[in-house]
Image (cartoon, rainbow, N blue to C red):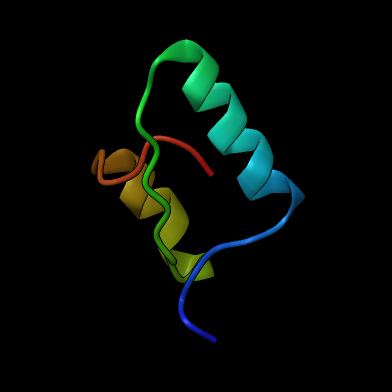
Length: 46
């Protein structure tokens, strides 16, 4: 694996971001770190 995120969800998020004029950046987050990352505003969506 080269670390590239792939799949329907990824393609959908990229398409939506493109249509809205946003840049999207994907990052891997451990399951137990998702809520703390959202609360700390380190990520915007899951």
